[in-house]
Image 1 (cartoon, rainbow, N blue to C red):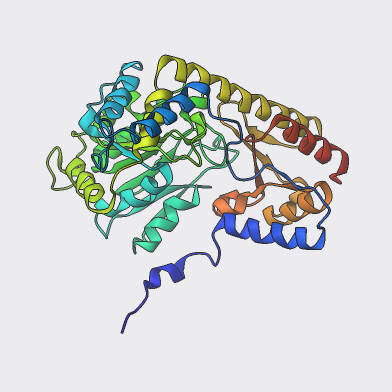
Image 2 (cartoon, rainbow, N blue to C red; image 1 turned 90 degrees about the vertical axis):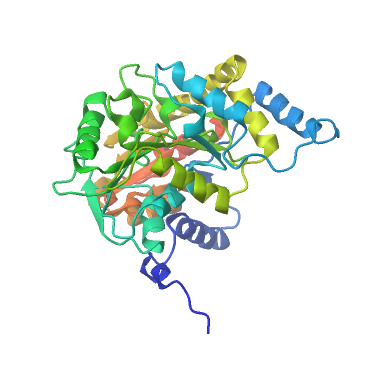
Length: 398
């Protein structure tokens, strides 16, 4: 008789974003004529840059000619794209060999799957609040020894290293959901801890292109020694508009070691996982990725980022003018606000929906320390952002 993976029963009854969709649907059924304004899920809205479209079209055209047609590619990714990513790091004075780069269909699946190459008894540390995938994927895999690193207003929403030995640490900077960015000194503490305890840092760098402050690190590998203890996951989704196109990468340095392993072992395990369970990212999409990393592509993508960050500026200013306590929105596309009048996160979700017809994300969905906070996203068309802000200012009863 077949049985189920009972680890799923240990997850919350509903994935955060599914619960938001359910509540929104109920509201629309009751108020079918009400136009909703969405400042919730971090889904890009603006067209892909011209050079990227040309790259994607070139990928399609290759499939139309027997001389250039490609079937299965390397599971690790097109060597041209892996080399381009290596060169991208080199521009930041970081040495990454192309064989340490693995192309994927996005940061989310890699964030979920990376735990599979580590032992079942590993102790996991995650920041709180946290992107739900880090926790849920480990629970599904049966790794339930999870330690939370609180992020609060008092510590600037930057976690402290655990006060006991852990084996894996998930670090996201710029942080989703708070928008906080760790300094080099703050990341250095984590790297030193990882080296001391033979732990591994899983560094989510999906939002680093939004950092405008040049003193802040855009890669964990800017920290000396990180190449021996850190795996970096990144994505084209948020800075090049690939949310529905799907393309990302993970860097697994040859020098990363853990208990009772030699150099290269962790890299080979991830390679084994990918070649077994993944057939590689779309050939067409990888052509688009190459276009993103071209000089013109990078310039055009910076304009996309500037557009969304102007949205963030508009949202943050409006909320501050209302007297609300607001964080983020300066080096990240998320606004992290304190709910007014000591309301719970879900109470404020319902209030914002009912009164202003705006959808956001309850902070409690990101973990216990997210309770009493709320996340708004800067992803959206400018006119919709302005309408949402005006509705909040006009209709939200404070």
